Length: 376
Image 1 (cartoon, rainbow, N blue to C red):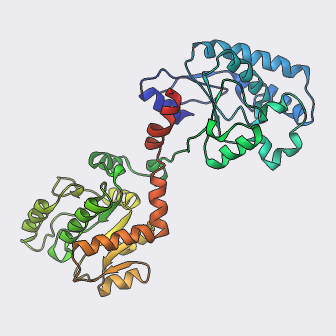
Image 2 (cartoon, rainbow, N blue to C red):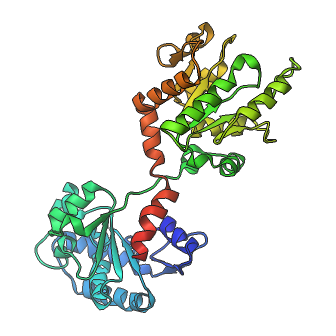
Image 3 (cartoon, rainbow, N blue to C red):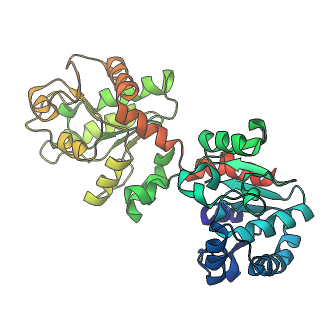
């Protein structure tokens, strides 16, 4: 609720959350205690209903909730109700919402996460008649949203609502929070648009000629031209300190780099261990085109992050990559590297799942699904 409300607020809507308890930064919260599923009166009512009893207190609770909600509903252009029309944890609230939605047809949206009467654990709490029947009944004038095809199928089977009248809006994931990204790492990603990269390739090395960074740059150009128009490459290090020609190598790479290539040192960015860890978390694959390595530490760092690896077929990298990495001949050109990267991204279950999860990040879900439903 908070994420949806904040997105609507950012889109220019005037938004308030109506709830029994809780708070949300930046969004007003109107508290009506009886909306809380743990309110004493609600707990007593739920226990009685579970036994099949509709007590006089139930009607009083419905009336109190209806009276307190009505002024807010009358002012609203949209009322988004999360989980109350199909889940029985506050039946008095559900009954009140049925009445209020009838007063404002077309205003209410029932956002369906869970369905009580398709869940075996609640089987013994379902009884004949009202209010139990409400949780398998379509409220007139209410639009229904389900968070998955499974939920939509169950809602349709339970209520008889045709599937084409149920909008599927998946939940989203907060990549920054899940990855535990630092503030500096998020600023870096925002600055270079790394959250939109598809895929994001990481090359965490110093700029020395034996690293053959130009192959990664050429591979990225191939990927962007043929399969992945949003592909990006991040090269983290600056010129190696022990060879004076490395500075000219950096200039060569900067001249060669096309769209999507970020040579952080050339762009006046210096990162530490924390930001590097953030990049490992964001990346879709580690790319190491070196012609010679003594050890290949990034291979192990990538392993800790479960990051797919595409690297040169040289002894030190095979030592650390075993059978899990994808190896490219040292004679290969940028096009061959692009093909190897593409194969890794399409055949690795981890890479596929990573990209699938990225399609469900909250900014995209909110912009493409949630707000269009609310504003319709």
